[in-house]
Length: 596
Ligand code: GDP
Ligand code: MG
Image (cartoon, rainbow, N blue to C red; front, side):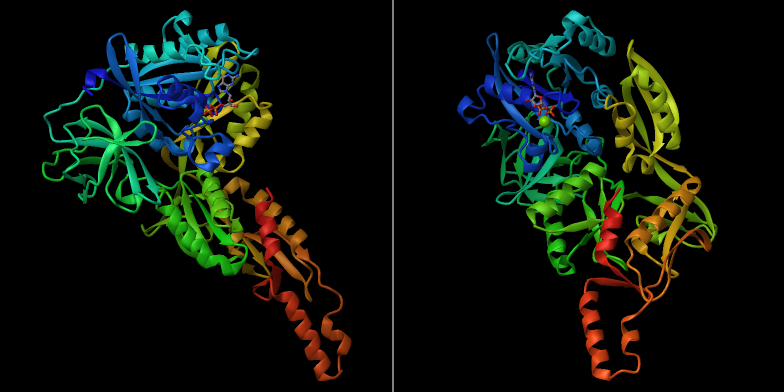
């Protein structure tokens, strides 16, 4: 297809505003999916996505569309909507010339809509504002059309109104895409360059790589080169998705499709990388390549220690399909053998954990998630801390923590509540705008560590569910952070160490010691539970001793009876962990870690 007849677009929307439903409807109207094949959310292929109704991995579909005399090819690129995947979203946007800004006509603009809109504007995309779900009785198209027009420019009357559910207005939308989205531009005679915007592992076909061709022509008979690594691969297959893979004779300027090279690991075919011809390589890669950086770390441990090899194999398998997942073995005094795993964010953590439990039948415990800290010692050495228990002792000059730019959208009556929460979480206000009389956009810089735990829940509860949140990484800052250790009889319990702001250390210490007092069974002797910052004890509880021990009964009695009693006691100890001389059932740690 010549570039003049190609339109590459994506749909950006807040979760649940109807992106998948609209995409399905477009597939039907363009004849790509026959009504009898239609199933809800055709594009959301992963089980978890379907069940939760969220899109995790982007996909691209080519749809034929006749406008007047001309047969156009519309490439719809489905971007992941969640904050954890900002980098993937940005690559998907870079593959498009236009974006449909889809807003639920009963909800209005939300934070995710805004965050994705700003990204789309940074990529100079043509923005088509569209109100969806106009069939809903609660829809307020007039009000939200004005809001949308105010945001992206233009007149409220020009905001298209559609229903993905009934199909109302969707034909007009397809025509509008042809009219408004610019055709792709590229140099057909230059060496081939195509950008990878997604890479998916398939059990049967190996890695399937989704690309947007920019210059030249990717030819099925040529070897290709990945420009970031210079690795070359044989091109086994090249084609377009419509909605199943269809082989083609290549991909020319502006085209969107897939290629298969026989690599077995998505790390060899990275999102953001540039594909070129190995024989006639381009001089410069396309811009924007970035290695995925884990932002949040957590320890993952099998509840049953004998599942450790299964967990290791499962992680190895998931890694094939997830370039952002990384892990290394770790041992914990409290939890045994496990892995320290790095994630893009909390949703990513949850998805990985759920897949491990569901697809590999594992029961897992994960430690409280933490961010990555850069510690500089007074002697100038630096340490990257991904596990709080490894926070260095000694003379620390500076600790740096990652920060994010957050966008919160809330009804104006909750401005005070949102500002209070952000201030409590060590936030810095950057700006505030009224989108309409009763809706406010607040922009804050916040430490990532303050967001990853329960920020979203706190925000929801303070705004009765009306606020929405989005954020993107924004570098790091120095902060007054300390490590709080929890000690049982003087021995550190690694899984409970935490890095917190100096002002929050006492509260953490009190909370954790109280919690452990509840769950640690009484022993033959008194067990002090302490919270400490360095050598300084900041909180203390005590588990009192049991008055009689088992052996007291047979003091001076015969030896075989004594042995029997000890045998019996051993049975009960099987699932116990020793922290120094204190025995604690593993379940106790699990309950301490999982509640709140
Ligand atoms: P996504 O998260 O943006 O992909 O949203 P979905 O397409 O999964 O839709 C979220 C919910 O809204 C689902 O329950 C859909 O059935 C519903 N929905 C989507 N589009 C419409 C629409 O045009 N009208 C109505 N009434 N409901 C819709
Ligand atoms: Mg969806």
